Length: 521
Image (cartoon, rainbow, N blue to C red; front, side, top):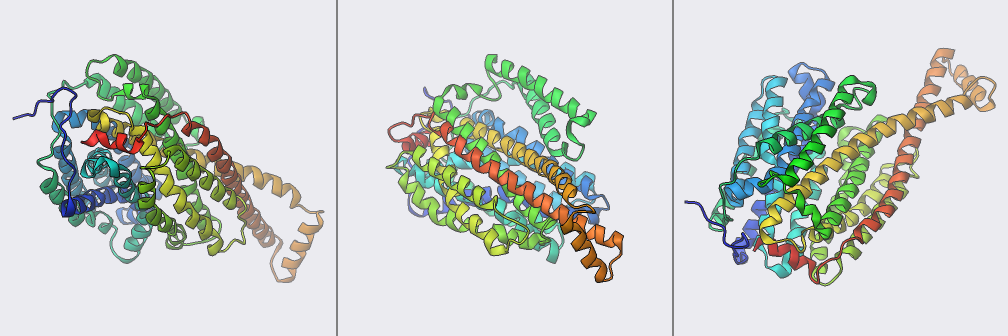
């Protein structure tokens, strides 16, 4: 029998206490960690997977693209699916389907089968993160909402860092299948524990008609946009007819989607949430900030491996210190939110992000791993003070029954900006490197004293003219890519400072932390 929503659309459940709260936190965090880990763990294993399945590395990138597209489509559907099936049922079923699809991915016998199973995995993964956020808030009393969000955000932050490290280690020492098989025991335990703890805390359900037109438009515009962002660099962006076509399809279907969803009686995505000032300000701040941050997260190991000659594992180790301060400070920030303006804490985060981007803009080809690790270590403080206050701010003042939809929409926009950040950063890096290479080559030519001296020195060591020229060209290439990376880090530093203005558009409630929590009780 279905629960009927009372007026206000919410059932108030008391927070969990004692051991139930501890186990609830562990179960939800494990499910989220498994999900976030899986979105990045395959990245470093692509060459291994492609070689094993007998396809090129470029074809192998469909393993990442397929997951990203399916995931981006289902995340914003969380609100509608929650109303239809209830958040506890939806969360537990999503976790269990994630386990099954992970096992199928490990069992895949060809690229086609692996991509098909990754589409399924990405689709069922969509509701897990927003619902874990909503369930975590319901686990804690309103006064400790900041702490709930702190514990939830730690798993979101550590997952992308642990993914490449774990993926590289598994691929080097075991079969690539194990990057998917490790989800099975974790997911089974998390799903079982979540059901035992939350089965009697289900949200009201209602038989809503399916907004088929809205759903179809969502699939088309998100699918086209995600494919465009993933394949743009590979196909030379708008010089490619395929990319231009996808851009037009994405834009046209997005316009129709927005018009349709704002006028539909039962929209599949509740866009009216953007009428709330705090939600809009919080979501834009967290999404644009995440896009800039994620672009630099992708760029740093890429530059280290391709230009400085680091291995994937060493580049992963250089990124690992970011988790130290993030884990230490997250609970402290959670407590601070109860007494301090979240806008002040978020401003501190953007100032630190700006500082570490500026530090990285001074990197050169002689930089050692400790110099690379220092700003990465400091970045942990920014990550702890970035997600928690802005998430609290975006959910404050919303009606209780709208929290799952708000969490879904917020996470969707964040993921979309993350994809934009990656595409723009990697494309700019190559374009700026080409420019720097051309400028440096002008100085490296016969008749220039420095060039003549280097060429003469190499000839004395027995190198031919062609070999000497190749060595000089490699040196120029290394400098060009390093200068390009420095340009992007410097631009990121300025962007983070500019983003501070967005945070202050919001007007937090007298207790924004409790406001965010109210949605779960």
